[in-house]
Amino acid sequence: MNNKKKFSILNLPTEYMMLVVLVVICIALCIARPAFYSSFNVSTLIRTISWTTIVAFGQTLVLLTGGIDLSVAGMAGMSGILSAWFMVNAGISPVIVIPCILVLAYACGCLNGILITKIKMIPFIVTLATGQIFTGIIYVITQGHPILDIPESAVQLGRGMLFGVIPFPTIAMIVFCIVLAYVMRYTPFGRNVYAVGGNEEAARIAGIKTDNVTINVYGISAVMASIGGILITCRLGTAQPTVGSDWVMPSVTAAAIGGTSLSGGRGSILGALIGGCFMGVVQNAITILAISAYWEQVITGAIILIAIAVDCVKSKRLNAA
Image: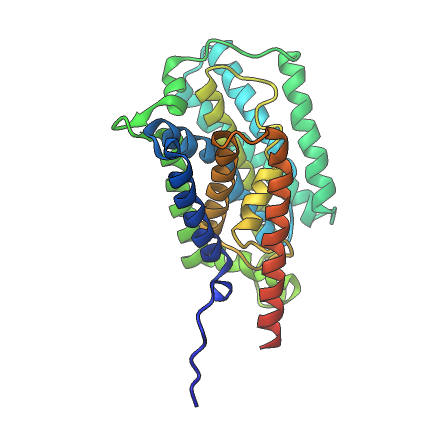
């Protein structure tokens, strides 16, 4: 009996399936608009992808546990504002300010996790509320005005390029992708995250400290959001109160497109990277093809529905097998 299965793109893991689609779209854009592969456009594209993809890495970990983090937008904005305020108004070196802000972000993220695990509050409500608190802090500090004159040493983190080719934010994105992918695949913590998302009660019976896993996951998500907010603030050279305000949807979308299940237990950091790149290319295509920007949300929403629908079909096939 011949047990060989006919190859189909639908048989690929979701992240690889989306990678194939992404490559096809890039090739089509290169043919339709040669400006797409110009050095300027590619540099701008990979830098723009970096912010939200870094945030999506943290969001992916949260989604893997079956939760969601709606506070990433507020955390990104608050981190950018606080780092700028201390550098500009207090004259503290970025070398000191940035690590301190990341520690604060981790503590705030852990607070989300504690409220969810110890008080048994719903992740949606907790992170929605704390996100509002973080956003409120931004406006209390700035009164709605940007913070100007960020030190040049900090600005270079967002504007600098390695060998004049690769933007520093892109390097940061790649480094975090490699580190987190390794952690999720080869360490007990990574395996525990998948176990909690797959079946929390079974994980608890197996001896996994599920509360600690969840708390740390929300802490990491906050740190990733904080890094994204600081990097884009350094890129702009000013701390805008609205920085990161629309990052919740892109972070969830990148993870979902990359194959992360919104019910938890299935997904990968590589998938989040592919999803972030996919979204960035689609947004860039809308610009270079002179399509009305008003269509961006329509197209993004349709992509999410298609990605989730395909994932649901594949899940049913796996369960039926």
